[in-house]
Amino acid sequence: MDIKTKREREKEVVSLMIALYCRKKHGCKTLCPKCAALDAYARQRSDNCPFMETKTFCSNCKIHCYKKDMREKIREVMRFSGPRMIFYHPIMAIHHVIESKKEKKQMEVRK
Image 1 (cartoon, rainbow, N blue to C red):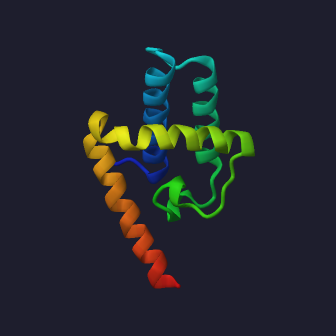
Image 2 (cartoon, rainbow, N blue to C red):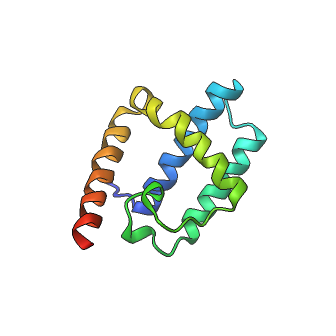
């Protein structure tokens, strides 16, 4: 079985959330140009993140490496798609919640 790296899982989750957002908000079957640009930007940021292997998800990161306008766009996507992921990708959504809670507990213990 192929084991994905944290980096690959993060990129997959973000891409799925952007695709869901684009499909529901813009009525597109494939990514519109704006959503495709956001997806490419998010993937590039993940590829260049020096902290990716030591954190669970970008949403838990204290260092925000997105440009301000892109950060606002990705937040809009996350606010919209996050709750809907349970209906479209339930296993992935549950995994994300569990891993996020684990990471938050670990962060509290370190303090």
